[in-house]
Image 1: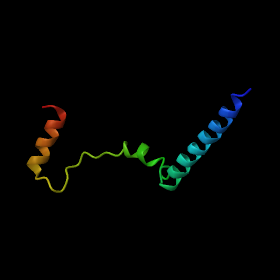
Image 2 (image 1 turned 180 degrees about the vertical axis):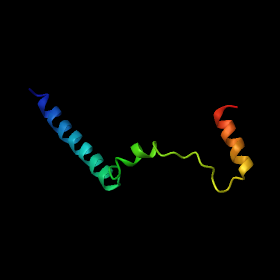
Image 3 (image 1 turned 60 degrees about the horizontal axis):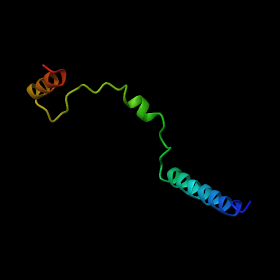
Image 4 (image 1 turned 120 degrees about the vertical axis):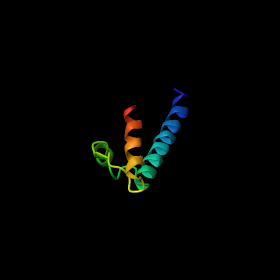
Length: 67
């Protein structure tokens, strides 16, 4: 029965720590965009970047394909 004097304050402290971590994550924007990363992987991004010359884009594509 004396162990309850240790376990109850430890459990209250653990709940407070978990609550603080959750509150921090909500306030820092961790849960703002839940769907964006799921859709971002589906976006086709195979077009060359504007900095690349046409020959460089072709070479980069060949390197990506392994040929």
